[in-house]
Length: 330
Image (cartoon, rainbow, N blue to C red; front, top):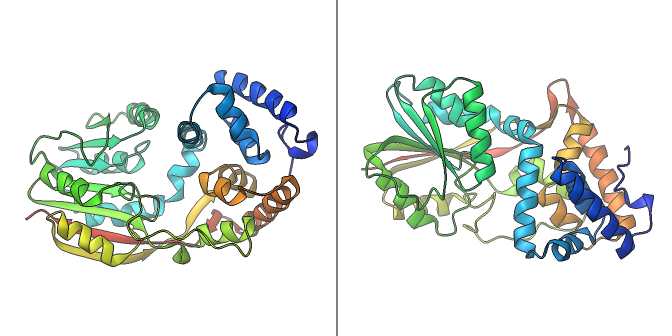
C-alpha cells in the first residue's frame, strides 16, 4: 500500500500534528480535493474530533458532510456497484413508454437515467435528500441529452407531490432510510394513480452480503456488527421480509411480493480503487473506531489484502443479496 501524506506512520499521532493535517486538508478541500480529508479521518483516530472543533460543527453535521464528500468523490464506482440489479428492477416496474415515473432516493441518478431511456414518451422525476447528489444527477442527465428526466431535493416520504401524479415509483437501494416507513410509503402511495406500481430493491441482512461481512471480518475480526432491530433506518432497513410486508400493507399497498435476487457487486475496477473507496466509507469508519494507530494500520492492511484477493477480470467483485419488492396502489 502506498502511504498518503496522512499515513499515521509519517509522524507521531499528536494533537498538534493532527491539527496541522486538518488545516492542510481543509485548504485542499476548498480547492476541490475531497480525498485528502477522507483519508485523514481514516488514518488518524483523532482527526474527526479535531475537524469538529476546528469548524464548530456537531459530530452529526461533520459525518453528513463526509458522507457527501465520499459519494461525490467515488460517484462512478458507487454507480457501478449495484448496476447489475438495474435490469431486474426496471423490468419488475413494467415501464411503459408513456409512464410518469418517480425515482425514490435517486442519488446521482443512474437508475433514473436508465428509466428515462425506457419511457421515451413519458417522464422520470428523481428525488433525493442530498442537494449535491441532485446537482450531479442534473449534470449527468444533461450530458446524456435526456430531456424527460427532472430532479428535486427533498424527502421522498413527505414531499408535496400532486395526488395520483405518477404511474410508477421505484427505488434502487434508496428506500431503506425512512425514519417512519409506514407513513412515508403511504405518502408515496398517494402520489401513484389507482393501480400504480411500486418496485424497489433493498438489501437483505448483512449475513447474506459478502461485501459487508468480508469488510467487517478484515477490519474487525471477531467483532460482530452491531445488531439493528428490523426497520431501523439504514442500509438494512428493509432487510427483514416480515417487516417489509407489514410496512407496505400498513401503507395501503396490495399485491405485495418479495423475490430473492443475488448479483455480484463491484467495489472498484482494481484493488487500489476499491481500497480507496471502501476504506473511507462510513462502515469502515465505524469498524475502525476505538482502534489505536497500530491496530488501525493492521486492519487496513487486511482490508487491502481481502480486496486484492477478490480482483477479477470484471473488477473487484463480492457476493450480494437483495429483495426485489413489488406492490401496487389499489
